[in-house]
Image (cartoon, rainbow, N blue to C red; front, side):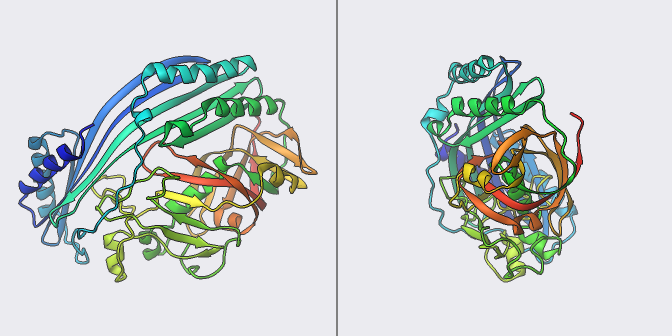
Length: 450
């Protein structure tokens, strides 16, 4: 780790070398180690220490940016010079309100010494136990266990300086048998929040149960979605329309719906980057403190999240949801929620299934793609366990299905919500905490032969 003091000195000295009217520097540094396994054997142990500095400068009303992964003062000074050169060639941005003003950021404790101390032997010991569970059931397991220590800092020429250090650990596995598979995954910032043997048993049990799947005709069925599938629904809602830029450009599922009940009253969704039940980051990449933002309240869309640019257009204040604007992949996205929570209900998973007279129990979606943002229409496949439910009982496994479904309409059909929530993350910053859902209708458009 670099540590707060070293980061502050490095970035403040770099800031002093800028000749631009305004300058913003974002530092992301991480030490990450990963143990990967396949065919019931550990085949890869890797560790990486990396850092990146993203610079954004303002020259008049022109903006430029540059990135370097060298953290010495000379390299950062060079990145600033590149950003200044780019700004002088860029068109003006007349409505750019300037960089963020300094605001107090209360720190959030999300650093676990146990995660930071995990070594390859520790990861191997945990993975070996997962593999023993797979082997004892005749399954073949693949997956990974990763542990990460990360530092994020933002400084700008208006006086902003924010620093956060956190940890993150994630385990995922797919267990295969002859004719079916099962999946399990969890993320956490605390090591003791991750129960790897339990996850391994869950994946194996589903693989065993998924043997000899039968075909089910495409159609509209009531479904129970495991949190893995629900996470896909929630993530697309966040990515495809819960940011202010999407709303301002008229391409959000929220357009024309804010303040109107369009989802089930059982659906309440919010973003909170300070909640330690997720994987917190208390400020955004402009150095603005993250606010808890209600996105849907009992089925009623409340409004999107903002960064400084989109907020200024509406005379509002940023909610602290800016992405690093110097990242090419993030520059055009605008603000996005990255710490989503879907409110739990009262039912256990068993109660959700018992409420299903005839329908499908879906554990996971795979390879999903946005078809149309207006209703958040998404197409994709089921994977790693689909089951036919009759009379509230799982009766047999089902072959994978393709679906094309408006996620807005799907969430309008929520009948019940599970009471247990799972913390899931794709390994980048951010996370989602979601329960299982019982939906009255979900549209499947095709089947597979495998």
